Length: 381
Ligand SMILES: *[C@@H]1O[C@H](CO)[C@@H](O)[C@H](O)[C@H]1NC(C)=O
Ligand SMILES: *[C@@H]1O[C@H](CO)[C@@H](O)[C@H](O)[C@H]1NC(C)=O
Ligand SMILES: *[C@@H]1O[C@H](CO)[C@@H](O)[C@H](O)[C@H]1NC(C)=O
Ligand SMILES: *[C@@H]1O[C@H](CO)[C@@H](O)[C@H](O)[C@H]1NC(C)=O
Ligand SMILES: *[C@@H]1O[C@H](CO)[C@@H](O)[C@H](O)[C@H]1NC(C)=O
Image 1 (cartoon, rainbow, N blue to C red):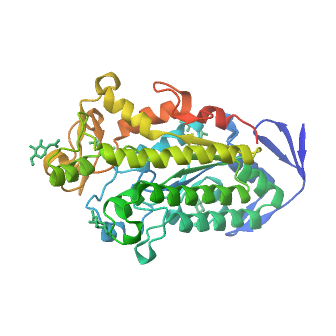
Image 2: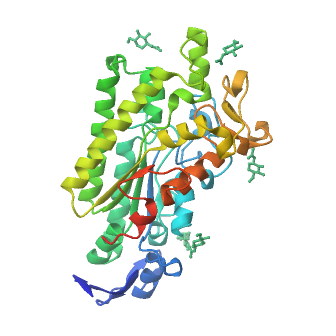
Image 3: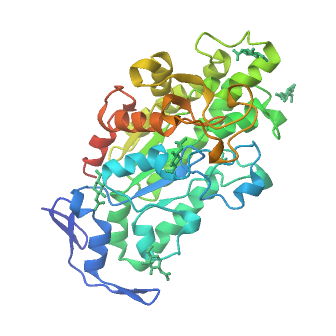
């Protein structure tokens, strides 16, 4: 039996609150019973209280993007087919047994919804702040995480709030939009000046600071994703074909120099996470290498059940890469045979394989390190 403050664990995943507290939230009374029921996912025996998701279009379909249809800058209104449930964090959440994650902007600010987990992520979110063009940048999302955790502190006892946060998972997936907007299309930041190493360093430092910030806020389980092989996405291959007549495109349809920049970012992020794990010995930070997972699928498409590794299922023009997915009605008939859903995003079929690999090391090993998500979930903090 482990004691911490007023909490006593008797069984794994079950909390008995020794101190009495009742707080009034939106006219509802939250008693210890309500809290332990909502907080601990007893039916699935999970040790994880909730999943909090931060990121870009790899975690949000547009549900959490205010005025998304008005602001979409890159002509893909539907970065996935209809629902966040087709994306990696939700597919992983399902495996953990957490299915109540709400988009931050769709929640009603009640304790119940925070306890169920929130998705702060937003299509087109970047690591860098971009002034008024910012769509839910990393820092904005961190502020919202902080507000939500403060709500817990106010409405639960401090000990319960801390235990809840420690036993939750924070999922971060950023970087793709920074490379698209600021680096490849350098719309607003000429100072970045196409120095790939410098750019990767800035981004990785920001991500590292974000993980430190979450640790300070009592997060002890963090999943951080690398960036996918952007050079293989339909849009980047198409743009390269426009400017170089395809000379830069390799046999797999990928633009090597773009992928090299992404690899540099991923390598540095991985390294920094190794260092953070050494520094924060009571935390578990998992790096998931979606780049190598997707490249493995692109290299052996048939083996993984794919026919098409180059063209977007939903898009117009050569390889569906000229114009993004404006309506899901324009999608191809068999999305599951495509690696790519739209200009820059993989299909649900790819995400499902990545989720399984992240969870169990099957069918693609070593995507997540140093732990699989399954092992992360079952590690006590
Ligand atoms: C438990 O996990 C399964 C998926 O493995 C999910 O379908 C089910 O809804 C989960 N149960 C609860 C109570 O979340
Ligand atoms: C907020 O949402 C939760 C469930 O999602 C619901 O139980 C609760 O009644 C809602 N509260 C308000 C004030 O609408
Ligand atoms: C990016 O900016 C640099 C200098 O600021 C310029 O030379 C280059 O052409 C720009 N690239 C694109 C793709 O706009
Ligand atoms: C490049 O574009 C041309 C037509 O514009 C097309 O025929 C060719 O297949 C494209 N190459 C690649 C690698 O996409
Ligand atoms: C998109 O989702 C809808 C609703 O789930 C489904 O009926 C449709 O087949 C999906 N389309 C593709 C291309 O996956």
